[in-house]
Image (tube, rainbow, N blue to C red; front, side, top):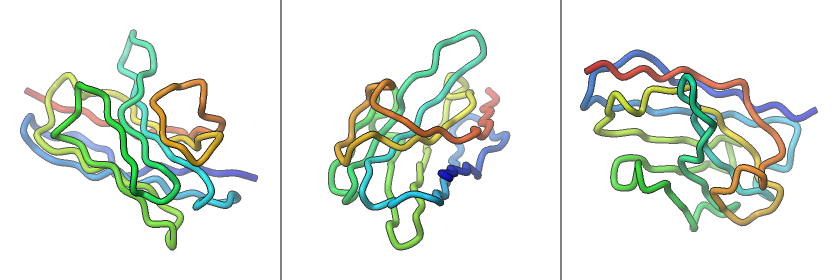
Length: 124
């Protein structure tokens, strides 16, 4: 059974940093691209970033470019999201997800398995 478990969320002030982690089990982790998504109250889930199976190719939503960095460690079956210069509008529940292929995309429908999410709250 596939499990994705996010961690690292919390309450921070604007300008601070957080590092989210997502540990995967039950899958051939290195075969798939992985993504991070977020959902704020009253809003639809949106893609934040994705990384290819090798970690070489990364993609970002315009809203986080230059502030967030996605990476992965295939030996640890873990994907990370380093979030710097956080803003109040980054407040959301953050989810990691497994892509249906090895190619990184920001299309929600391309993802098949989702974690339970971790809350990130940025105060002004």
